[in-house]
Length: 317
View 1: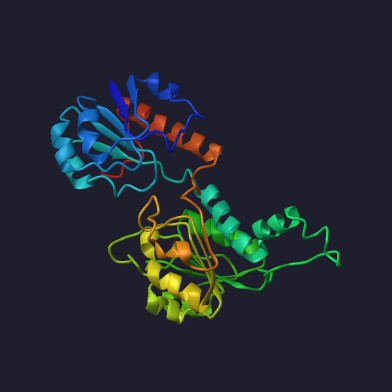
View 2: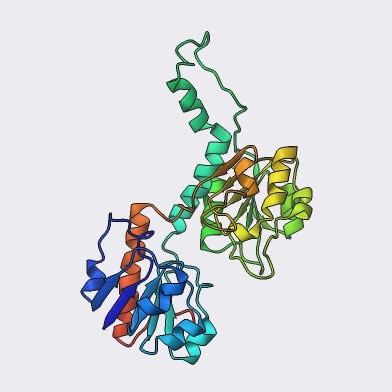
């Protein structure tokens, strides 16, 4: 069994091992693969693991031995699922491995906005506290979340877990999604316009589709409270980034926390880079060591299950 990993570095930059995969076949690991090299590198392999490399029908046609595509992630829009199914290729993903880590990043962004930890730590380290005439100081207003309203857009595993933490912090909870779902006591399921109008914090946790691309645009932002906070740990394409940058400059938005942008790596001309009060991290919500170790373990189990004739986490049944 020939196994190829096309873009291994993001999931394992050297702090984990691929030995579990090597034990299952003849393994070749590439840290990164240019899109145009994908077919040649897969070659006559039966199994390929990918993270962000796109697999098209043309690539499948050039790799007739391919039997399994296993994605080192949850999202699977990078694979032509219909083409894979036509050619008898099973496609698997890794659902749920990063839920807690994404929740953690969501609140890391929110708490940084509310508490300004980095700003004030920097001020202390430059001597400001030593020379302060009072026992404390703060350079920006600090925000208490208790009693504020959190609006969650998308209510799957991550959205619901974010809601649990928000309620633990004393926040009121509004939820919207494509289909109405049960919500915990004290929460309300509402329409998107109502959520935008009533929320102090809006946090995005829905998959990106053709229907919701750039859903947070100038019109949606105009519906939001003045001085609201916007968080996005889902997909960058959910935002009209220029409209968000404009809302930050005008003060319509107090702040934004983003772990994702529309084109990654971020481009030099992305308007969020120069917008005030915009906290950006480089798509690392999924990247804690424990989270990536879980990703690898489930991915290896995907391969073992396939070899046993009982494929799991199949996204093109």
